[in-house]
Image (cartoon, rainbow, N blue to C red):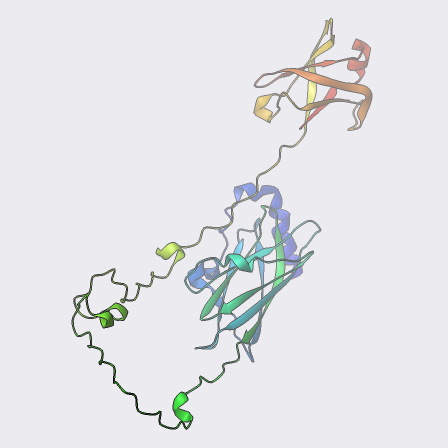
Length: 309
């Protein structure tokens, strides 16, 4: 996708609240459709675009490490956005779709990186746009550093002289053919008839999936939107002992709260009027009553008031 097309996705940010984050996603929007990152000489890259406003918030990638090998997997993501202030992020899951908590991505600016120690099998990477207006083009690089395998020491390869004869020969251990709690050999084996929780029997391996359930990991929670200032028109002005009581055409239905700040705006501009501060006395559903230290002539000339958190 071109940078111009990406910019078009971001322009849709004004209506991001009306677009589902996965409306336009492809198969790689879910972990089952993760696209593979092919390793050549233990390194590989992948590129893509995620956009919350465009309905393609999440991309999944899977890295299949060499069979039978274990080692450190280094991941680095660089990204670019169509305008300043936007960002992307990624997190890591193991071959059972369980989050790798110690592999949280770190970094400043538009470079994020992390490492997965003792990585083996398959590693899943979820690349996503964190906020409702976020979008960007990314490049993910993976480098695998396998552990050096040292050949096991085999004592049979070393020539050892026969030991001297011992005065007594210890009694031979009785093999554990069937379960017998009195037989010491049964304590380190799992013969037929052993109880399910017998200490010599191996523990069952949990099935693949998050928490052993195989369920799809939930998407990252959307960000909490902050309240925005409200500019209200003056509906009525009354004189009181505390100053002027001014009724405004905005209330709790517009998000106004009693602890908000008051600023009378100068004329038809958005600049605050000098001495135009005040306090909120009461907030109704569609109106708000404020108290200001201004004259009636000043309120007649300045009929807009900004209410802000």
